[in-house]
Image (cartoon, rainbow, N blue to C red; front, side, top):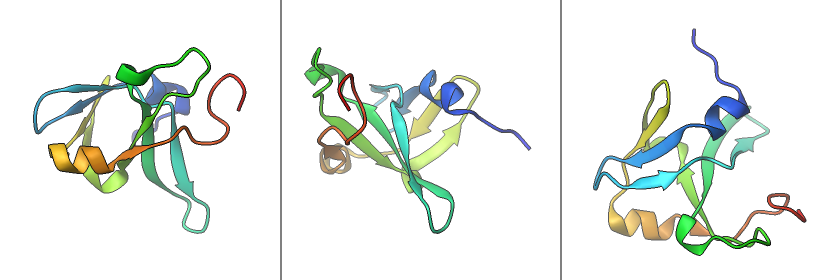
Length: 97
């Protein structure tokens, strides 16, 4: 069994298989406390980066992850699916939480 730490996840680059675009590296993940499962990865959108940590994020549902390799996470999202994955900065992420 292969295991990953949060540090391992945050150093991996996320690539979209639909168009080959680089989406960035995960900032954190969502956890379902009832089931103990990861439900989504949260990635800052590099195009809207802010020094105050108010960047918008992609929320990539776990079901869209196709493969986790040694240094890359492959996801499959169409352009319209990717647009629906946008969310505001989750509480607790960034310089001022």
